[in-house]
Length: 462
Ligand code: PEP
Ligand code: CO
Image (tube, rainbow, N blue to C red):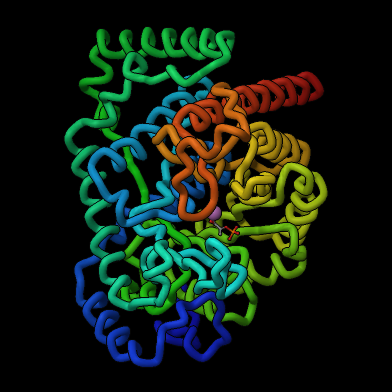
């Protein structure tokens, strides 16, 4: 429920971080563009937003698993049929692995169809020895150094690229793309480790066999919803002029209808800041990035401010500490949430805390650190009696070379071969599948542990 002292523009009176430094002469253009965007039809429907909130609540209870993934910085140039199909394909294939291996339904949230804005630690960066304004995402300025001046017209382009992407995803799903993702179409060619390829192939053969049974028994053709899946879209809610323009009153509530799900970045979660002010008034399910610098008390206050009614499914805590810090920080955050009695869904962003730069200047991540953070997250939640609700990943359906390791054993020396990200390094197609297969093992172990705990309890009762 919306607070009495909130309005669509109340964030404007609060201190704000990470907004595009538009030149004075483009301020009128900004107003004009924002006014045009606010007249546009929504990209998503509020009924879909409510459905996602219910799904996130289910993931918070351990009944579903969230798979939240996509680019760090989505690029306008990637708004092509092939790129969108590849993004969707990897999410669908990973979902099949989770559901087959760990027997859990998956809630898919694409980090995309609007993931353009990027927070930056500095207003300037050095490119080829020259100081230039930092790249803040395709909706603000261009990656090419000749286009670094922020241009408000890019917000309109962002709107159209988001809608076009979302439209094609809807068309693909409506046309049966999901049911084409059966195991025989998977590409395991980039796996260098023969033993792993063998393991994956046998799992896929079993999965194909299971799906064959469902088809023969006519379950696949006749059960409503089995051949189609939901995909939700999401982005970091960063440029508040844009977010405000896409926020609409529906009944007594305000929904951001530019996306199903939005999250607050680790750099814009100040209690009295503009972002928290904007986010506390919208009805969408929202994420809060929780990094190592977030204190337990601060987290409790954020939860109270953002979800005073303690609505289930409203808040997802996206924890991102790094595999070397999670053991200390996650228990602290879990304790704070327990003390506050807040209902939250825990998701592990296992990428942002595991980024490092190689000697020759490539920002990268190692698949084994990412897996280590996911595994620890599962174990810590298991030991704390809380629920591991899913994973948040920067990933792509392409065979890029941005992260190292995994079953393709990508080496540091190979990063330069196809390093195309505009921001953080993404897991490639094969590395994303690795995460799905390996993570399913932790989830199975968790289920076995829960089952043996339940059996022990039953024995005690008997
Ligand atoms: C991101 O998700 O790309 C990001 C900038 O993360 P964080 O806010 O957690 O640093
Ligand atoms: Co990132």
